Image (cartoon, rainbow, N blue to C red; front, top):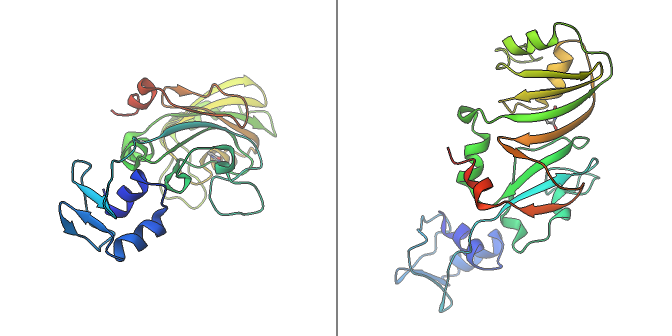
Length: 229
Ligand code: URA
């Protein structure tokens, strides 16, 4: 990993503070002063900051039940960031694994392990995401068939990958998709002439949301490992 990332993972410093310390010559890697924040290091290297031996803290893997009217970003856009609901050290080091829209509720994963999140969001993995969807109009009789073969989203050149639709009642359905295009679920229903009025993510892979709204918890070792295919 990058040296500045390692400093973040082993101290309370954020990325820009870590960079400043490295550039000021305060960091020694395997007995050599390193001033390049992008230098690749390994956790087994001897990394010393101002005479203090650093040890990287274990990565964090977090599940959050995102409430409506919160944003999956650090930038204040008029709604609270989902990071306001999580209380752990070194928040700056965390990132969101697959964002939800401001009005969407449900399962959000947060981590500081980039390889793990790549496994989940990489298109090649085709990780399943399950959404409970409220619709403005009754679901069309041929919707499941259309989604199972793929629909063309506005502005796209290729149809969506096969998706599973379960009808709960005429205006409530459960949709399972393996892609993560921008506003994918809303655009899929728009493509068949309907409109999403409520959207909630229930599941990512085999991991189901089991928290009250706005609550968070660390994932178990088995839950973390379930994404390492
Ligand atoms: N698809 C959407 O349209 N919105 C979300 O928040 C998630 C998936």
